[in-house]
Amino acid sequence: MPDLTAADATALSALFRAGEASAAEIVQAHLARIERTEPKLHSFVTLLRDDAVAQAEALDARRARGETLGPLAAVPVAVKDVLAVRGRATTCGSRLLENFAPPYDATCVARLKDAGAVIVGKTNMDEFAMGSSTEHSAFGPTRNPWDLDRVPGGSSGGSAAAVASRQVPLALGTDTGGSIRQPAAFSGTVGLKPTYGRVSRFGLVAYASSLDQAGPLCRSVRDAAAALAVIAGPDPKDMTTAARSVEDLAPPRGTGRPLAALRVGIPGEFFGEGLDPEIASAVRRCVRLMEEQGAQVVSVSIPSLRFAIATYYIVATAEASSNLARYDGVRYGLRDRRAGTLAAMYDATRAAGFGPEVKRRIVLGTYVLSAGYHDAYYLKAMEARGVIRREMESAFAACDVLVAPTTPTTAFRLGEKLDDPLAMYLADIFTVTANLAGLPAISIPCGFSREGLPIGCQIMGRHFEEATILAAAAALEAALPAPDPAPALAVDGSASP
Image (cartoon, rainbow, N blue to C red; front, side):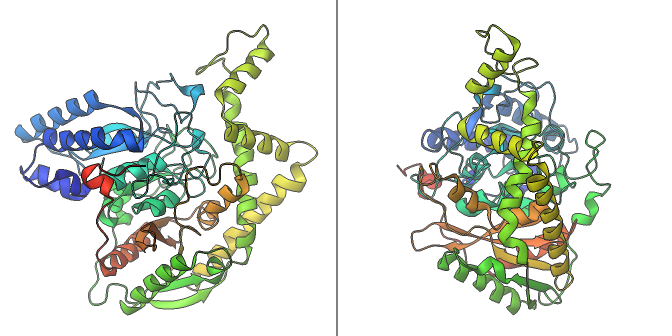
């Protein structure tokens, strides 16, 4: 039998349906890979081995009875630990929720289960999704499978590392300012952020409610499309979901050159100062390949990109300050019982439970919402957000998709930016615009640096036009040279720090 961990999610489900592999064999192969590589990677916070084996056995029994199987039947899936899995620890990478087990599934998790996916574990993340490196987890950092001395990106770094190292073919992450796409670029995987409102946020522990969105990390664009078709759609438990069916996700079938008539916009501001020349070169090669397939390339402008990081960190931290107020030691989670008064208990619980990055963002968010500074900072940021959204809409009047780098650099070294939060925040410079505007965006691997580190190319689209960006990404994926071999850690577990 071929190496089952080398197949993508779509191929694995096909093998299972055809009777060429059992669900038990598929799951056991991935659990064995996790066992070999996890001590060096630390992709997971919680491994659900017994649950996964039981799910696989149930799927094999269903197939034997001839029952209808879901579109992701027998596919091992990892879930970022910010998404609720019923009865299993959901820590958000924080000591404050270390022993919290929700009594329900997040809607996207429930839909994966209904589609036959096998949940194998909860992945490591920056605490409460606040970070760009997965170094801010209370349970220790995750390492990049391509170079164990480097970060996998964040905050969905555990999910990205699990996919890149072949621990699983598919994982769920969440994207508030780039937390799916940035780790996808750092790890050489595909990461899709859907349109805000496309995927239910029920069961997603909130960081910034107007920005958060769940989406897949995987090895191929077809897997991203398959996963999105499963998790997308209206949800009565989340009134911010849009009344959009999943049928409109299917890209149209065409003939001739795959990108004929597609207008590709190149935002010049994304190629300015601070961009690694190797990344610029790799993304421009992508543009040339798209042009060769029939795309029309046009130049567009997003002048307010220079304000995007400041705008994002004001809006996001303001919402975080409000959302994290619920963690007071009273209702659930950690409680410091040594305090003599209610106020002292609040203080002691939060001081012990929150890490330094979370505290920094709560303080910043509280400051920009305070009476003396609300108008000067928060309202200004909301005005700037409106400007950024209008500029993005104006750009899409001239094109169908925007193509740009996902990140300004390749993966940086562990500890390199921990003492410089502003430098860390700049890792999101090219991704936050899609969140501020609520647009769909995908990052796909498009090459490697001279140091052998993955590079990501980002494709953004209009609201609810995931089909367009998926079609463009699939055509580009097919046109790019065959990817380098998987990281040595993924193949034999031999890589070492």
